[in-house]
Length: 319
Image (cartoon, rainbow, N blue to C red; front, side, top):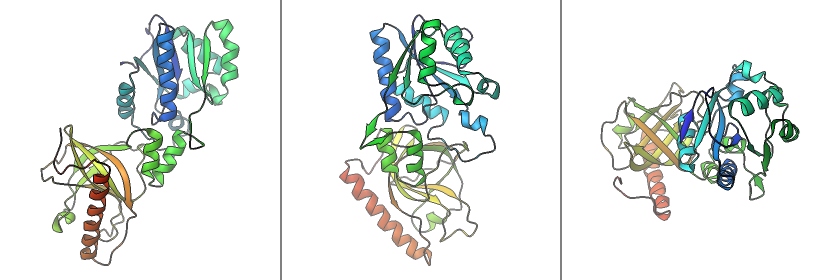
C-alpha cells in the first residue's frame, strides 16, 4: 500500500476513490472498501482511500475530550494494509480546509488534485463546510466535473446498522465481544511497559503496567478482561485489569496492567500490543488482598477455561 501525506503531485491513471475517516475500519467500512476494490478491478483502475488526520471533530471541537477513537492512525494503516488497499491518502484536516464548501472540495481536491473518475461512498456520506454536502450534492456535480458516483448501502447485521459510534459505545461499556463482532477483529490497545509498584508480584500475579501515549485512544470500561498479548511478534495470553485498583490503591488513579500467563521476562520500556477477547468481570473492592488473590485465581481459571473452549489457549508462547 502506498501512503501519501501530500497530494500536490498525486497522479495515477484511473483513480477509483472513497472518502471518510474510517475509524475502526469495521464491517461496514469493509463492505465499502471491498466494493471499492471490485470496482477498481472491473473498471481497470486503482483504488484510493482519502482519509483525514486529525479526526475532523478533534479539530473543530478542540476543547472537547469526549471523542475517543477506536484506532490510532498507525493501527488504521495496518488494518487497511491487511484489507489490501493500494493507495491511502492521509489528508491534513485543518480549520481552513474545513471551511471549503462541498463544491470547492469536489473541484479543488477530488477533481484537480486527485483526478477522480469514479467515487464510491457510503449511504450517509456528508462532506464540506458544516457537512453541507451529501449524495445529492455529489450527483449534481457528476456532469460538469465528469465523474461517476456509486452509493454503497449500510451493512446491517442482526437488524443493526454497524457504525463507529455503536462500536465506541460498546467499548465504553466494556462489551468487547460485541465490539469485536462489529469490527470483525479483536479491539486492541498498544503502549509501552512502565515500572509499577510491584504489588501484584507479592501475591503471585505480577503485572506489566502499560502507558498509552495517545490521549485520543478509547479505553474500555474498568474491569478484568481476557487478552492476547503480542511482544516482539510472539503471542501470549493473560488477564488485563483496567481501573483504579480499589483494594490496594488509595489515590484512585486509573491504571492498565496485564498479568501474562507463563511469562517472567523483564520487558520494561518495551512496546506491547494487547488484543481484548472478552470481559471477565467488573472491578471489585475487596476487604483485603487475600480475598483479591482468591478472586484473581478464580479469574485465571475462568479465562483459561473459556480460551480452551475457543481453542485459543496454549500454555507457552507461539511464534
